[in-house]
Image (cartoon, rainbow, N blue to C red; front, side):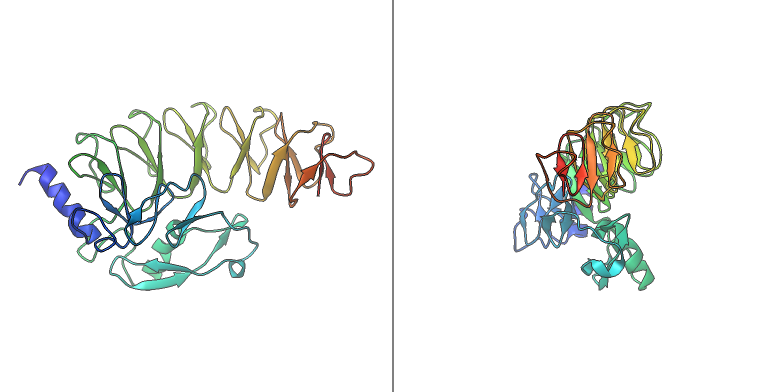
Length: 295
Protein backbone atom coordinates (compact mmCIF):
# COMPACT_ATOMS: atom_id res chain seq x y z
CA UNK A 1 0.00 0.00 0.00
CA UNK A 2 1.36 3.46 -0.82
CA UNK A 3 2.32 5.73 2.12
CA UNK A 4 -0.32 8.34 1.28
CA UNK A 5 -3.09 5.75 1.14
CA UNK A 6 -1.92 4.18 4.41
CA UNK A 7 -1.97 7.57 6.15
CA UNK A 8 -5.48 8.28 4.90
CA UNK A 9 -6.67 4.92 6.16
CA UNK A 10 -5.16 5.65 9.57
CA UNK A 11 -7.01 8.96 9.83
CA UNK A 12 -10.32 7.35 8.89
CA UNK A 13 -9.91 4.65 11.53
CA UNK A 14 -8.73 7.02 14.25
CA UNK A 15 -11.53 9.53 13.80
CA UNK A 16 -14.24 6.91 13.50
CA UNK A 17 -15.70 8.42 10.34
CA UNK A 18 -15.73 8.05 6.60
CA UNK A 19 -15.67 10.78 3.98
CA UNK A 20 -17.61 12.97 3.59
CA UNK A 21 -17.54 14.41 7.10
CA UNK A 22 -21.11 15.00 8.37
CA UNK A 23 -23.06 15.14 11.61
CA UNK A 24 -23.90 11.45 11.12
CA UNK A 25 -20.27 10.40 10.87
CA UNK A 26 -18.33 12.83 13.10
CA UNK A 27 -18.69 13.55 16.83
CA UNK A 28 -16.20 16.43 16.57
CA UNK A 29 -16.10 19.05 13.81
CA UNK A 30 -15.44 18.92 10.06
CA UNK A 31 -12.40 20.73 8.67
CA UNK A 32 -12.49 22.60 5.35
CA UNK A 33 -10.80 19.55 3.85
CA UNK A 34 -13.63 17.25 4.96
CA UNK A 35 -11.66 15.55 7.76
CA UNK A 36 -13.31 14.77 11.11
CA UNK A 37 -11.33 16.62 13.79
CA UNK A 38 -11.53 16.05 17.53
CA UNK A 39 -13.17 19.48 17.96
CA UNK A 40 -11.38 20.48 21.18
CA UNK A 41 -8.51 22.59 19.78
CA UNK A 42 -8.74 26.38 19.61
CA UNK A 43 -7.79 26.20 15.92
CA UNK A 44 -10.55 23.67 15.18
CA UNK A 45 -13.41 23.83 17.66
CA UNK A 46 -16.84 22.28 17.23
CA UNK A 47 -19.09 19.27 17.71
CA UNK A 48 -21.75 17.15 16.01
CA UNK A 49 -20.18 17.42 12.57
CA UNK A 50 -20.40 21.23 12.42
CA UNK A 51 -17.78 23.25 10.54
CA UNK A 52 -14.63 23.72 12.65
CA UNK A 53 -14.16 27.23 14.07
CA UNK A 54 -10.94 29.06 15.00
CA UNK A 55 -11.37 30.46 18.51
CA UNK A 56 -8.69 33.14 17.97
CA UNK A 57 -7.20 33.07 21.47
CA UNK A 58 -10.28 31.92 23.38
CA UNK A 59 -10.63 28.42 24.84
CA UNK A 60 -12.52 25.63 23.12
CA UNK A 61 -14.87 24.13 25.71
CA UNK A 62 -17.58 21.56 25.02
CA UNK A 63 -17.39 22.24 21.29
CA UNK A 64 -17.77 26.04 21.57
CA UNK A 65 -15.38 29.01 21.69
CA UNK A 66 -15.55 30.56 25.16
CA UNK A 67 -13.53 33.29 26.93
CA UNK A 68 -11.03 32.10 29.52
CA UNK A 69 -12.42 32.18 33.08
CA UNK A 70 -10.55 33.86 35.92
CA UNK A 71 -10.09 31.84 39.13
CA UNK A 72 -8.16 31.59 42.39
CA UNK A 73 -8.70 27.87 43.13
CA UNK A 74 -9.86 24.70 41.36
CA UNK A 75 -13.36 25.04 42.83
CA UNK A 76 -13.94 28.26 40.89
CA UNK A 77 -13.83 26.34 37.59
CA UNK A 78 -16.51 24.31 35.86
CA UNK A 79 -15.98 20.57 35.51
CA UNK A 80 -14.56 19.47 32.15
CA UNK A 81 -15.62 16.18 30.60
CA UNK A 82 -12.60 14.41 29.08
CA UNK A 83 -13.07 11.67 26.49
CA UNK A 84 -10.12 9.33 26.93
CA UNK A 85 -8.41 7.31 24.23
CA UNK A 86 -10.50 4.20 24.98
CA UNK A 87 -13.80 6.12 24.92
CA UNK A 88 -14.12 6.44 28.71
CA UNK A 89 -15.34 9.77 30.11
CA UNK A 90 -13.50 11.39 33.04
CA UNK A 91 -14.37 14.70 34.72
CA UNK A 92 -11.72 17.11 35.99
CA UNK A 93 -11.16 20.80 36.74
CA UNK A 94 -8.15 22.96 37.49
CA UNK A 95 -7.02 26.54 38.14
CA UNK A 96 -3.53 27.71 37.14
CA UNK A 97 -1.96 31.17 36.95
CA UNK A 98 -5.30 32.83 37.61
CA UNK A 99 -7.39 31.11 34.94
CA UNK A 100 -9.36 27.91 34.53
CA UNK A 101 -7.37 25.40 32.52
CA UNK A 102 -8.52 24.05 29.17
CA UNK A 103 -9.31 20.42 28.28
CA UNK A 104 -6.02 20.20 26.40
CA UNK A 105 -4.11 21.05 29.58
CA UNK A 106 -6.05 18.79 31.93
CA UNK A 107 -7.36 15.75 30.08
CA UNK A 108 -4.09 13.90 29.44
CA UNK A 109 -3.30 13.75 33.16
CA UNK A 110 -6.89 13.08 34.22
CA UNK A 111 -7.30 10.13 31.88
CA UNK A 112 -3.95 8.55 32.80
CA UNK A 113 -4.63 9.03 36.54
CA UNK A 114 -7.96 7.22 36.12
CA UNK A 115 -6.30 4.29 34.35
CA UNK A 116 -7.27 5.17 30.76
CA UNK A 117 -5.16 6.08 27.71
CA UNK A 118 -4.78 9.80 27.11
CA UNK A 119 -6.89 11.60 24.50
CA UNK A 120 -5.08 11.48 21.19
CA UNK A 121 -4.62 7.71 21.13
CA UNK A 122 -7.30 5.30 20.05
CA UNK A 123 -7.89 1.92 21.59
CA UNK A 124 -5.38 0.49 19.09
CA UNK A 125 -2.83 3.21 19.81
CA UNK A 126 -3.69 5.13 16.64
CA UNK A 127 -3.68 8.90 16.34
CA UNK A 128 -6.74 11.06 17.04
CA UNK A 129 -6.77 14.09 14.76
CA UNK A 130 -7.17 17.59 16.21
CA UNK A 131 -7.23 19.49 12.88
CA UNK A 132 -5.72 19.46 9.37
CA UNK A 133 -3.81 22.29 7.67
CA UNK A 134 -1.70 23.00 4.61
CA UNK A 135 1.62 21.20 4.39
CA UNK A 136 3.72 18.80 2.33
CA UNK A 137 3.99 15.04 2.42
CA UNK A 138 7.76 15.22 2.87
CA UNK A 139 7.48 17.29 6.09
CA UNK A 140 4.25 15.85 7.50
CA UNK A 141 5.47 12.78 9.38
CA UNK A 142 6.24 11.60 12.90
CA UNK A 143 4.27 10.77 16.04
CA UNK A 144 2.08 13.91 15.93
CA UNK A 145 1.60 14.41 12.16
CA UNK A 146 0.12 12.32 9.39
CA UNK A 147 -0.47 13.11 5.70
CA UNK A 148 -4.06 12.77 4.46
CA UNK A 149 -3.22 13.01 0.77
CA UNK A 150 -3.76 16.77 0.46
CA UNK A 151 -3.34 18.16 3.99
CA UNK A 152 -1.22 17.61 7.09
CA UNK A 153 -3.32 16.37 10.02
CA UNK A 154 -2.14 17.19 13.53
CA UNK A 155 -2.69 15.04 16.62
CA UNK A 156 -4.82 16.21 19.53
CA UNK A 157 -2.87 18.33 21.99
CA UNK A 158 -2.10 21.05 19.43
CA UNK A 159 -4.24 24.18 19.51
CA UNK A 160 -3.22 26.38 16.57
CA UNK A 161 -0.80 26.89 13.70
CA UNK A 162 1.15 30.08 12.93
CA UNK A 163 3.46 31.46 10.27
CA UNK A 164 6.95 30.08 10.64
CA UNK A 165 9.94 28.40 9.03
CA UNK A 166 11.18 24.81 8.95
CA UNK A 167 14.51 25.83 10.47
CA UNK A 168 12.95 27.38 13.59
CA UNK A 169 9.82 25.28 14.07
CA UNK A 170 11.12 22.37 16.13
CA UNK A 171 11.07 21.26 19.76
CA UNK A 172 8.61 19.58 22.15
CA UNK A 173 5.85 22.18 21.63
CA UNK A 174 6.20 22.80 17.86
CA UNK A 175 5.65 20.79 14.66
CA UNK A 176 6.42 21.92 11.08
CA UNK A 177 3.87 20.70 8.51
CA UNK A 178 5.74 21.95 5.44
CA UNK A 179 3.73 25.18 5.27
CA UNK A 180 2.92 26.27 8.82
CA UNK A 181 4.17 25.86 12.39
CA UNK A 182 1.71 24.14 14.75
CA UNK A 183 1.88 24.92 18.46
CA UNK A 184 0.67 22.80 21.35
CA UNK A 185 -2.31 23.86 23.44
CA UNK A 186 -1.37 26.20 26.25
CA UNK A 187 -0.19 28.99 23.95
CA UNK A 188 -2.88 31.64 23.65
CA UNK A 189 -1.68 33.63 20.65
CA UNK A 190 1.16 34.03 18.17
CA UNK A 191 2.15 37.56 17.18
CA UNK A 192 5.00 39.83 16.08
CA UNK A 193 8.37 39.38 17.74
CA UNK A 194 12.06 38.71 17.25
CA UNK A 195 14.15 35.58 17.62
CA UNK A 196 16.41 37.27 20.17
CA UNK A 197 13.59 38.30 22.50
CA UNK A 198 11.22 35.34 22.05
CA UNK A 199 12.94 32.97 24.48
CA UNK A 200 12.17 31.36 27.82
CA UNK A 201 9.54 29.04 29.26
CA UNK A 202 6.60 31.29 28.29
CA UNK A 203 7.56 31.95 24.64
CA UNK A 204 8.18 29.89 21.49
CA UNK A 205 9.71 31.28 18.27
CA UNK A 206 8.24 29.79 15.08
CA UNK A 207 10.67 31.53 12.73
CA UNK A 208 8.27 34.38 11.92
CA UNK A 209 6.11 34.82 15.00
CA UNK A 210 6.38 34.61 18.78
CA UNK A 211 3.82 32.35 20.49
CA UNK A 212 2.97 33.33 24.05
CA UNK A 213 1.71 31.07 26.84
CA UNK A 214 -1.94 31.79 27.52
CA UNK A 215 -1.07 32.84 31.07
CA UNK A 216 -0.08 36.08 29.29
CA UNK A 217 -3.30 36.72 27.39
CA UNK A 218 -3.18 40.49 26.79
CA UNK A 219 -0.47 42.09 24.64
CA UNK A 220 0.16 45.80 24.06
CA UNK A 221 2.75 48.18 22.62
CA UNK A 222 5.79 48.71 24.82
CA UNK A 223 9.54 48.28 25.05
CA UNK A 224 12.01 45.73 26.38
CA UNK A 225 13.26 47.80 29.33
CA UNK A 226 9.78 48.35 30.79
CA UNK A 227 8.53 44.87 29.92
CA UNK A 228 10.98 42.92 32.06
CA UNK A 229 9.30 41.80 35.29
CA UNK A 230 7.92 38.39 36.29
CA UNK A 231 4.31 39.08 35.30
CA UNK A 232 5.08 40.27 31.75
CA UNK A 233 6.64 38.73 28.63
CA UNK A 234 8.44 40.68 25.87
CA UNK A 235 8.14 39.20 22.38
CA UNK A 236 10.49 41.68 20.72
CA UNK A 237 7.56 43.73 19.49
CA UNK A 238 4.79 43.52 22.08
CA UNK A 239 4.56 43.41 25.87
CA UNK A 240 2.21 40.65 27.06
CA UNK A 241 0.88 40.84 30.61
CA UNK A 242 -0.32 38.14 32.98
CA UNK A 243 -3.88 36.85 32.90
CA UNK A 244 -5.20 38.91 35.78
CA UNK A 245 -4.62 42.16 33.88
CA UNK A 246 -7.89 42.93 32.13
CA UNK A 247 -7.11 45.98 29.98
CA UNK A 248 -4.21 48.09 28.68
CA UNK A 249 -5.00 51.79 28.11
CA UNK A 250 -3.37 55.19 27.67
CA UNK A 251 -1.43 56.51 30.61
CA UNK A 252 1.95 57.76 31.80
CA UNK A 253 4.89 55.94 33.35
CA UNK A 254 4.81 58.24 36.38
CA UNK A 255 1.15 57.53 37.18
CA UNK A 256 1.06 53.85 36.23
CA UNK A 257 2.77 52.64 39.42
CA UNK A 258 0.00 51.26 41.65
CA UNK A 259 -0.31 47.67 42.89
CA UNK A 260 -2.94 46.98 40.20
CA UNK A 261 -0.98 48.56 37.34
CA UNK A 262 1.90 47.63 35.06
CA UNK A 263 3.62 50.03 32.64
CA UNK A 264 4.64 48.37 29.35
CA UNK A 265 6.63 51.30 28.00
CA UNK A 266 3.67 52.66 26.02
CA UNK A 267 0.48 51.54 27.78
CA UNK A 268 -0.78 51.15 31.33
CA UNK A 269 -2.20 47.67 31.98
CA UNK A 270 -4.66 47.39 34.86
CA UNK A 271 -5.85 44.33 36.76
CA UNK A 272 -8.97 43.69 38.84
CA UNK A 273 -10.76 46.58 37.13
CA UNK A 274 -13.64 46.33 34.68
CA UNK A 275 -13.80 49.75 32.99
CA UNK A 276 -11.67 52.84 32.35
CA UNK A 277 -13.10 56.30 31.65
CA UNK A 278 -12.19 59.97 31.61
CA UNK A 279 -11.46 61.61 34.94
CA UNK A 280 -8.66 63.15 36.97
CA UNK A 281 -6.11 62.05 39.54
CA UNK A 282 -7.93 63.90 42.32
CA UNK A 283 -11.41 62.55 41.60
CA UNK A 284 -10.49 58.97 40.59
CA UNK A 285 -11.62 56.46 43.25
CA UNK A 286 -9.94 53.54 41.47
CA UNK A 287 -6.62 53.44 39.62
CA UNK A 288 -5.46 56.58 37.79
CA UNK A 289 -3.29 55.66 34.79
CA UNK A 290 -2.26 59.23 34.00
CA UNK A 291 -4.97 59.54 31.33
CA UNK A 292 -7.93 57.45 32.51
CA UNK A 293 -9.62 56.34 35.73
CA UNK A 294 -10.10 52.58 35.98
CA UNK A 295 -12.60 51.20 38.46
